Length: 295
Image 1 (cartoon, rainbow, N blue to C red):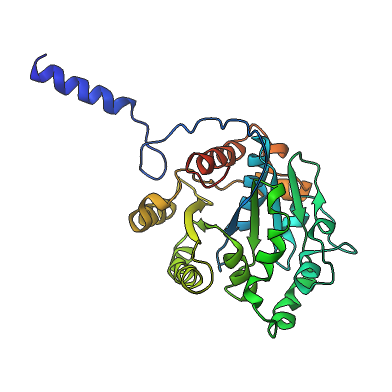
Image 2: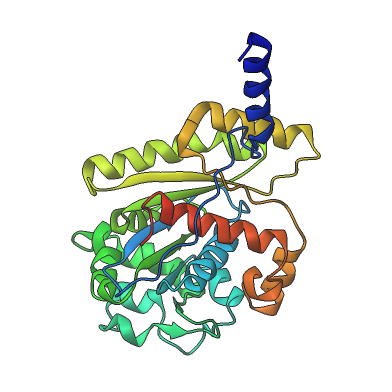
């Protein structure tokens, strides 16, 4: 083949290369195989001390997508606002909650687990009572490990446990990090959200060093991405430059379908199953399984 022919072949190869929003070649993650059994669960904390970055939305929709692929998922509402519970249509009053399990007023975690209208997806709800937990637990021995002890009792029944953390780096979040095998950081594609990631990574490193040596930063999930704005594109580029392969290929775009689904008390995969946002969370589920971060 001539030199010109070689060049044409190389260029043809580049034509077939599809770049994703992160600027890297887009991987076609395969549909996961069915599991022959369930458990023990891998525990993933969805954590970011900044509010409004998509933690609860990602917990609901990632959990629903994993459940669609036959994974048994337990979503733990660990935020006193109770948005995860509300977003899945789960009652939060006059029922056992994660607060009762932390304080020991309910001993058996199975009593607090609530089924949903979505197959393979269960929830431990939370309500405003959880805001008092840090005060009540401050004098407890090994207070940072209470959630880990609670989840250890139900871990064998699930493939994935997702913990939706509150937007702070207090005792509840430290409990979640101590219980988790991995951390998924939803990161809004916005400058102020980017600034706080360094502090969160520092906290993760401290918990790993002092309390949970098995803890890993699984990845950073870009959320609320709008390809039409230069700001979104620049922030995403900066995140990829800083964290490299830790940034998931999947990027969650901004859409009004998410609040609509929350009002309906359903994940986007059920509320608008053919929407590109539903496809994005299914891709994220496949990516986690492909990377070995979920069963």
